[in-house]
Amino acid sequence: MAGTTVEYIKHHLQNMTYGKHPELGWKMADTAQEASEMGFMAFHVDTLGWSLAMGILFLFLFRQAAKMATTGVPGGLQNLVEMSFEFVDKLVRETFHGRNPLIAPLALTIFVWILLMNSLKWLPVDWIPSVAHALGADYFKIVPTTDPNATFGMSIGVFILVLFYSFKIKGVAGFSKELSFTPFNHWLFIPINLILELISLFTKPVSLALRLFGNMYAGEVVFILIALMFGAGLFMGVLGLGLQWVWAVFHLLVIPLQAFIFMVLTIVYLSSAHEDH
Image (tube, rainbow, N blue to C red):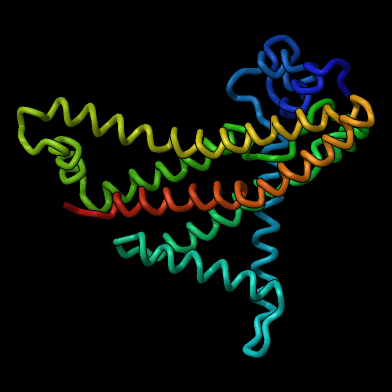
C-alpha cells in the first residue's frame, strides 16, 4: 500500500476520489496528484459512501426500536433510543426559544448521525483500507468527519436553515434592521454594524465545520502515527498497542462530545434565527 513512513501517512489521509481529469476524462484517481487535478467538483466516494451507510444505520436502528417498542420491560436498543430522544428533547426545550417542530428531529438526527460517523474512528486504521486495497481501491478513508467536504456540507445545510428562518420569522426588513442596528443602535454606526454582523454570520458555518473536522482529523493522524509503531520492533509494537488503547479510550469522550457540540451550536444558531427583536 505504501513504502516509507511519509507515504504511509499520506496514503491513509487521501480520499478515494472520482472526477473529471482535464486530460484523462472521468475516472477514479490513481494518485493524489490526479485527485488534485480533478478540481473542486470531484467526488470523495468513500466519504459519501460511509456517510450514507451511517445514515441508513441510524434509520434502521431507530425503526427497529420503534417496531420493538413495548410498555413492559424495554430491551437494550429501545432503552438507548429512548435515552437519546429524551436527552435531545430536554436540551431543545432548554436551549431553543422559538416554536418549530423541525428543531428536535433535526437535532436528534445531527447528534446520532455525527456520533455514528465519528465512531468509525474506533476501527483500526489499516483494517478496512487493507480490504479495500485488496479489492483494487488504491485509497480508502472510513471516517467521513475527517473530510472537510462532509463537515462543511452539514454546516452549510445548517447555515441555509438559519438564513431561511431569519427571513421567514423576521422578514427581509426585520432581518436587515437587526444586522444594521446591532450592536450599536444608531444610524451612524450602520456600516460598522453590518461589517461586524456579516462577519459573525458567515463565520458560523466555517467555525462549525472546522471545529468538527479539526478534532476528528487530528485524532486520525495520531491513530496513524501510533499504527506506525507496530512495524518498528517488538518493544515499540507493545508500546503502540498500549497507546492505541489509551487513545481509543480518550475518544470515548471526544467522539460523543464533538457530536454534542455540533448539535448544540445548531440549536443555538436556529434559536437566534427565530428571535424577532
